[in-house]
Length: 230
Image (cartoon, rainbow, N blue to C red; front, side, top):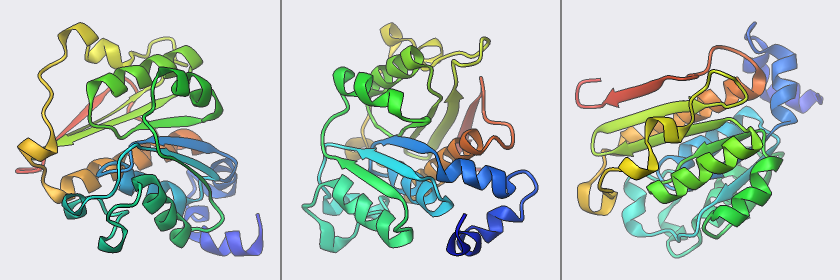
């Protein structure tokens, strides 16, 4: 680590559970964030500020004024820009040492099959079941840990699916494709602004724990949050 890195990450280095070795693992790691909206914004920002060396952000959408209520990686001046371009600029302003790849497209089966193997951890920050199941299939196939988050209304969920473990379930085990519920969207249902920040930050925390080898990730657990009552 350079002198600048020792200073930047000094608060991590003071943590016995993380320390220099854990921080070096973060600096050498690669994370794939699928979705650059409400969940992907805080997730990508915390991964970058924590020093994850390579970050790939994938999203086909552009910034809209209705996003600004909760998608904190974006700003009014970036309305009309691809979300991944906006998110990459925000990440660069936080930590220019992070190598960011911005991919303005939908993460379909073929793309995931090519790029999931290159990541050390995958974060599902999407808002539709088709992409969630495609992500799960790619992570199971290539034995990559998947950190899944969801938020709608006042309700949030976070889970870690790591099929490198023999006893680990996958996303399909919890939410089978043939029993998927009727999909709801923020545009018609609404979402409490801080909720996506909470869930996205939890996703970043779980991903960092996996990458640094510290703490106990949410293996085989589904964390559920009702933000009305906490």
